[in-house]
Length: 153
Image 1 (tube, rainbow, N blue to C red):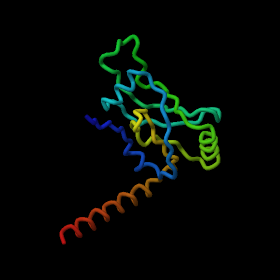
Image 2: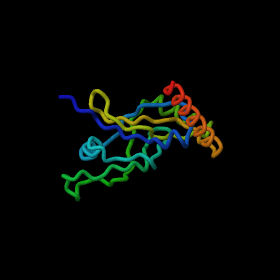
Image 3: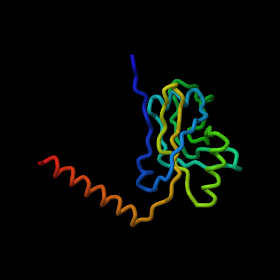
Image 4: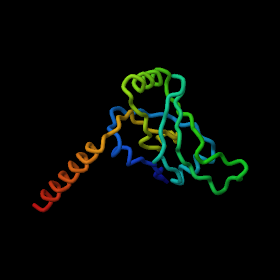
């Protein structure tokens, strides 16, 4: 019996940022948080990642709803900061790019890999200006119209 694992996506990130590179990171979770993510009760819309002291990467602002079968006294805070697991050389490379180029780390997706480990896809991103966002929307509309015209015949 195969179950499809839910993926939590940040669709707004691709609208607000130009994604230059992506990285896959593990995420340090408590047992009840894993169960909530499996149930699809998490959000990364307002989340962001930051390199702290060139040694660790932390995810801030991710919301994971409290699992209903957990004792409220033992349940972790829904918006607590979570440590991300990356190789040391990846962390140093990210820290350097963020400092020198003024880029941002944005979570794009939370999912489970084949070995049932929770992973976060991070995007090294550059913020878009308002006119860039309009240009992206215009390109998407033009592409949609072309696809419709081709479909019609």
